[in-house]
Length: 224
Image (tube, rainbow, N blue to C red; front, top):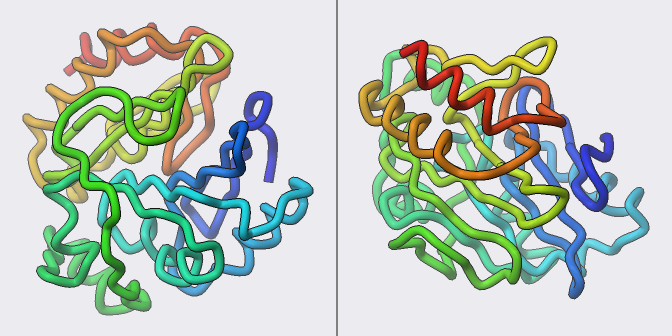
């Protein structure tokens, strides 16, 4: 794990990143990583000199198994509230599973299926959520209910999920076409994020951007 900025910890789990945010009253997780890797998250929280019971909220960017893989067990151990956008609640809760593209159907066949979990806070609009200092934005395309989160810290830290991926030398790229449900909606979401103000951006896959991150999104939007 590494500290991206003060109180924001990147937790690599296989090929995906989860994040822990230290807030005034405990810890917030953003996504939970590849199924079966719950101990990696627990160990990372412990190395932050925090207890898993201090995790009071888990924000989910979208329903894909590599992002929600450990949410049920982490919720049990911590008692944390689960937050997700209304359009992705059905697959997260187990009410409706959508394997999506051919690639995702193959992944679902070889990856342990995440345990369904009820969602405590359903996002229906953009703006502040129950955690002070964090706002949510509906950024569909990768999935219908993909959400990105903006932390009011250090000039703004964007948790972009899989709207885009971090590249080398501070660049960003579109996520692969074959994992997007709606490529046009994804383009619109990139443009929407490009209109926000933030200095840093972190991703479900790839490297964080530590400066001028909103400008990188504007450049990506212009390339579509």
